[in-house]
Structures are given as structure tokens and as C-alpha cells.
Image (cartoon, helix red, strand yellow):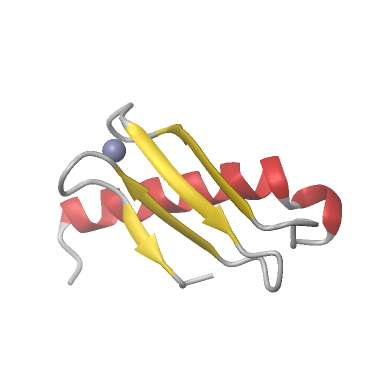
Length: 76
Ligand SMILES: [Zn+2]
């Protein structure tokens, strides 16, 4: 599915992952020293986005508090 809305959502997820990476992983070769569970302002709607980062492989999950906004899991 490649509707414009889907693309916008994907790039917002990519931006968010990039921000999380720079905050928690860049200094430690891509994996944080301990598992991260935190929240930040959503780049798309400015709502509350809760995310996690695995201390094993650096994978992230994230979910915005707004319905239909950013929500991803286990896609690195
Ligand atoms: Zn949002």
C-alpha cells in the first residue's frame, strides 16, 4: 500500500526512529546499554509517543497516543 498518507506516516516513523537512535544508540554502536522505555513528543501530531529500545539488538517499538498516528513494532 503506497498511498500518500501511508508514505507520510512511514517517513514520520523513520524520522522518529532516527531521533531515538541519536538519543540512545549512536554513542554505543547501535544498542543502548540498558533497555529504554521512554516517551517523546510525536513528530507528526505533537501528541505523546511512547517508545522502547531493546538492549539486545537495538530494535525499537513506538506508539503515539493519538488514534491512527504513529505505531510500529519490531521492524528494526
Ligand atoms: Zn502522533
